[in-house]
Length: 111
Length: 115
Image 1 (cartoon, each protein chain N blue to C red):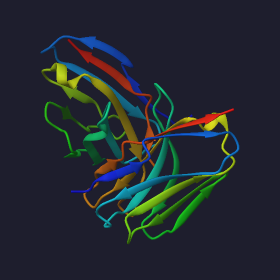
Image 2 (cartoon, each protein chain N blue to C red):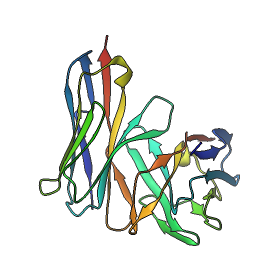
Image 3 (cartoon, chains in turn blue, orange):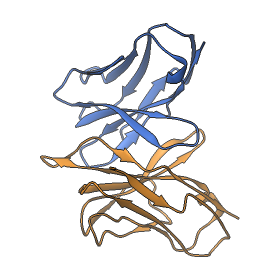
Image 4 (cartoon, rainbow over the protein chains, first blue to last red):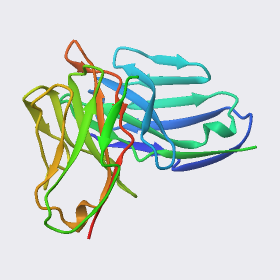
């Protein structure tokens, strides 16, 4: 059964730092992996979607990489800002249409 | 504006009283899905639908029903709610590309409390 783990569970950094969030999964037979952002009391906002055939995707200050063979993905955030404070979740789509989420990394960027 | 709309956003009910949480999307997406989010457990999939009249169980389907009679709507039905169904519920939709689920769009969530 697919399991998705995100480490660390929480992270606090000063403004301006570059940072990396990690996501690992146990079954490499995935169709895609998606990174989301969730603000308190809000729904999830899609950040980046990486298909299984891709190695990385970029959007502005965000870069997500995927290494299927090792079961890992990273989300790189450049020049972090207080507005980046949120919980970041990764989710992998398996072969049966189901989507498995990690428990998220709660990021706090201090001014 | 492209969106996924859930109603109600907040609901307090009592054990055993049937309720329905509606979900509607205006993006003509084939794929729709329901999740619940609980502290320490993260987001877990309840049911999903790949198209009209096609539904499948996710990881935690017990106590829930769904239907997909129209492409835009995917209601979640709790026939006899119990306190362990107190949770934050999210609906999501996505277009299918070559049969694969693409980028997911989420609703704002429905916070349900069962007394």
